[in-house]
Image (cartoon, rainbow over all chains, first blue to last red; front, side, top):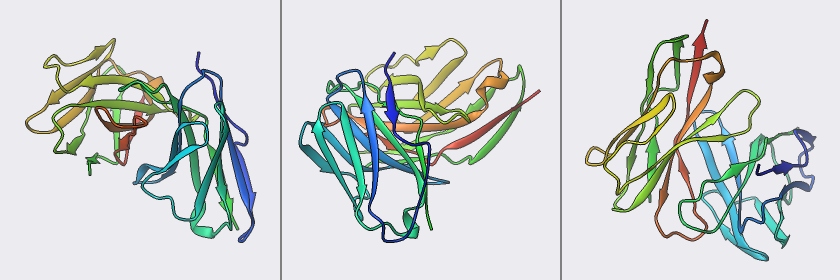
Length: 113
Length: 116
């Protein structure tokens, strides 16, 4: 079974802090994704990566950056956390071939105080 | 850009009954894929069913089936013989063919409660 592991289930940080969310997958997937999930808005793509050191902006990249130094790991960075970044963050991964389903982690519920 | 709309924020159904979740989408693409994902209270999102737009036959996975109406841009999910374990958020999602990274566009979700 595919395993996508997010480093924290719950995280509480303060405004202005630099926050790192980590995601690791064990299936040698080329693609990795970061979403945020908010009630009524579904999942919105923040960034994705289709290869090591490659990244592409999603629909809502403002206030976020990402890093992919190794194929299995994709990090989401909040450079200076703000209260409007309080949300559920989901990581996903997939093979590169078209229509391959994405496999999701358990999510990190991030609260910015 | 694609948009996906789920018009039912919440639904409930009695155990063993049938329920249908609605999804509509807007696209100018002719080739694409549609998905239903389920997110139980434990939160891990899992794929329920997938439909290729070029296939006229509706996809079926055990108790889950879809009604895909390409001209109407509609993709509803039918759950037969509902079980308590079907209680979850359900998300409809769209994927263009041949797009870098296999990006998905999600609807806002429908919260389904199966009552005993």
